[in-house]
Length: 72
Image 1 (cartoon, rainbow, N blue to C red):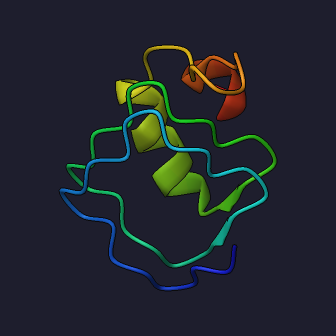
Image 2 (cartoon, rainbow, N blue to C red; image 1 turned 90 degrees about the horizontal axis):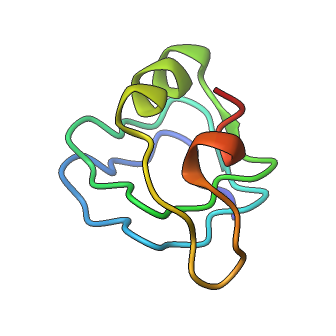
């Protein structure tokens, strides 16, 4: 998925599969990410650090922990 400069602010991304996503310049402020799988996603380093603070859960489809998928 190509999502450059997309606005994911305050969105519900719980249990989403976002693998291989390219989201440079996107904003995830306030997004709910419990169980989301970001494996191999390309994110801004600042976004990645912020998402790591909220990373929790395991994706029910892929079995990957959100924390691990963000490489926190």
